[in-house]
Structure formats: structure tokens, C-alpha cells
Image 1 (cartoon, one colour):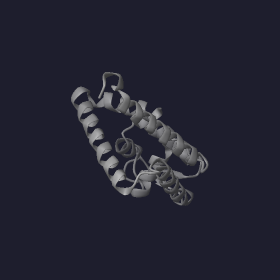
Image 2 (spheres, helix red, strand yellow):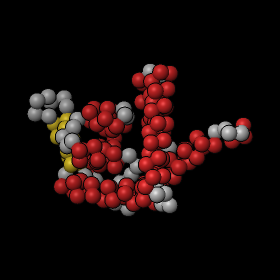
Image 3 (cartoon, one colour):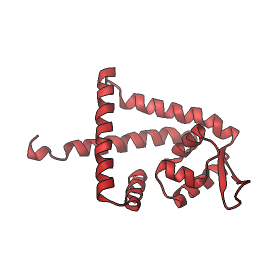
Image 4 (spheres, helix red, strand yellow):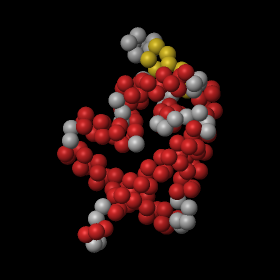
Length: 163
């Protein structure tokens, strides 16, 4: 690769990620969801009744960030936040019937966005892209762990997610 092309791959990767998040956010907004809310909904669809701390750890964000989003989703009628029967200091978050119904819309939005993003790529190219992105993810995860402490990783992931 020529010197003038250095950074081109990273620039394309960042641009593709930003555009895919924007396209997905637009589809989700049509169903009443803001960026990031879909991840909480999908996490609860897989394992309903988690605590905010469990959700934060699972999604790699800080508890205050997740609490705001949970409260917003509860206000929209998608989630129910109930006090724990075992520990009054904890709450458990569950999908409401409306929330369970919304999961299909979220999954459909993701599928449509992915289909748009992968348009023109055959199955072999898609498989290769998946492997390459997984490798990049592994490289960067390893670099982050080696170069920073856990709080720095969380802050960096939150900053990237907010873009």
C-alpha cells in the first residue's frame, strides 16, 4: 500500500460503520426507537428480567447510561422495571407485551439494513467480510486490553457508540 493510502482502510471502515448506524437508526426511529435502545431490547429478548447492572455489563456501557435508556423505554411502554423480591436495592427489567411485539420490528430493521449494506456481495464475499471484520475486532480488542484499563475501554466504547 502506498504511503498516501495509509489510513484509507480505517477511514472506509469508520465511514461504513457510521453509515450503517445511521441507516439502522432511521429504520428504528420509524418504530419509536432511538439508537442504542434496540440493543437493550434484544438483550432482554434473549434473557428477560436482567438487572440494569447486568444489562450494562452485557452491553459494555456504564450503569448510569443504561438507567437513562431503561427509564425512557419504560416510559414508552416497552419495558417494565420492578423491584427485586430478593433484594430491595435491585430492580429487574422485563419486556412488556408491547416490547415483545416490538422485537420483530427491531429484528426486521436490522435485517433490512444488513441487506442494504451487503447489496452486491455474493455469499462468499459476505463470509470473507465477516471473517475479516472479526479479525479486525479481535486485533483491536486485544490492543485495547493490552493498552488500557477496563474503565478506559468502557469510556472508549461509549464514545464510539455515541457517534
